[in-house]
Image: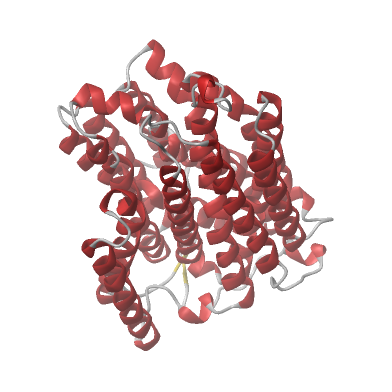
Length: 480
């Protein structure tokens, strides 16, 4: 059906932001209510964690693959496929009669992770060059904030309705956004000719699953158990095979020359380190404040109360993430990475040493939110501005994936530390949280050190001139 009019960048951005926010919510919406789902579906604690693990694995595999598909076949079409996967997955999950169907639904939802790299690619294609940095910064802030908003919304939704509404509500939103995207998102003006390298795709999927599965389940299986060690060994072998295949391929899935660019590999390493800190804070600050007051250090907060204590973090994240793009006129993306990492380090140290009052936890969360807003937006901008237009989807998808690997590492390490300090009562000792947040502070400090290696650029050069770029060799420009 032909479009009634050609939408402007603002309309395009609004649709993309709604799509990205809907998927970002799914990252954290279920985390606080897993015990409720376990009880309602009559399953075990170890089994219900697959609701998160299945989503993580599917999203990790789909993100770079669908990003490459978007570069080849069109970002507008790939966006619709991703939104359809989210909607179908939500429908199946909302109707799930047992835990097996719910886990399968989460796999389908995970395929929608392509929304992130596709959105960044569409912004680069459709926006005037001088507005790209600001738009990408705001979009990154939307994604980061959406990832945390789920923690705040989960309690009230389950309290007033039912856990199944955690899927009915996003499904409704995604269907509306999908219809708007179908009518309003322009066809991709730049595409990359070629095909999907199936062998590289299979190897990529293989090493990601082999790595993330034991990282997610190691605490349950045992870190020295046979299947954990076998999967880690398989991940190393498959990763080496994937690198070899990509370097020899005429049409690689992920161009290793691109990944070796100084701005790309350093930013990706920052993404992994700060991703560990980010998801560690998201997962364990709510746990800290929900520890019963009888422990001597917890507040005995409800799920809703824990979410409200996270609110200052989310507000700070949204405000400073949105401001990150415009700030590049005066403060370089590298400087924002450094400031963000420094604030993350300070916040984690505060959580480790000063968590005896609710206001200190909320303040530390706000500081972390400022850092996260700056680092998330500048990180995406650095990646998008450092690669050719026809590789935007694959590059930003791989950056998302590396951040996911960092998140899995951080969550696994902190889970192991907290579990090691949990006694027969089931209540973790305070030292478990103290050591955990000190570890997350070290991860943020390491991100600061790596950010020093990011190539320096004059802030004014971070924003391209408002001129129409010439098509790169080998690209096909198609009419919108």
